[in-house]
Length: 239
Image (tube, rainbow, N blue to C red; front, side, top):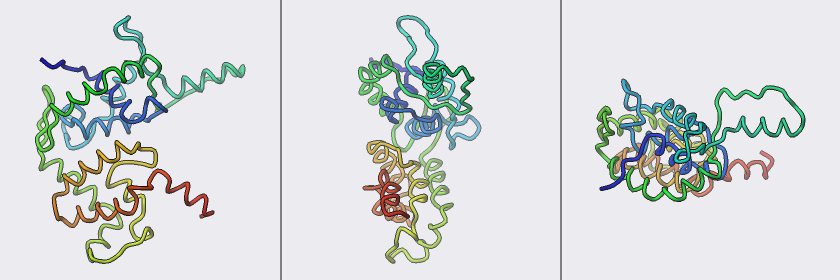
């Protein structure tokens, strides 16, 4: 029988999947990623179409506490690092972080590498595309997920222009990269595997052949291969 993973373990896996083994990641990025993988657990109780970021926040904070040899501290905060550097420089000023960023420590990275594949399989087994349900959670249907993604797309400023003429050729000025980021729910720091996963889920939710799906595909053609270097390119051009 497959192991049942705890929320805390799934959140730590999510942090690793979002790049937390290599650098600091903000709570919202982790929370949204987990919601898209398993909205039954990581959605708001009264509005299950939206992510509950506090679930990730609480579990990450708990992972900072020593719970014994089987549950050691597995994360650090960016404020911890700033505090450490300040002490090294002899600066005793208080370091605050209203919205901390998180990173796996050595124990966390080791744990993530050992368990990543098994948790990934577990998440796939409990969050099928279409109908998703977490233990004791609110049911979230494919229709509701699709409606939420559709609304996200239709709010983009360039969508209305595209919808009026889907056969035209569009430039980056007409379909800006900020709309690409918003439609696929990523940013310039999102690792490539996470973007590809977000792209697949978004396209599936929009439905085959819809105007919204074609709009998303157009944005993908413009930016999928260079969204991580786009702003560096602008800087290099002096724009």
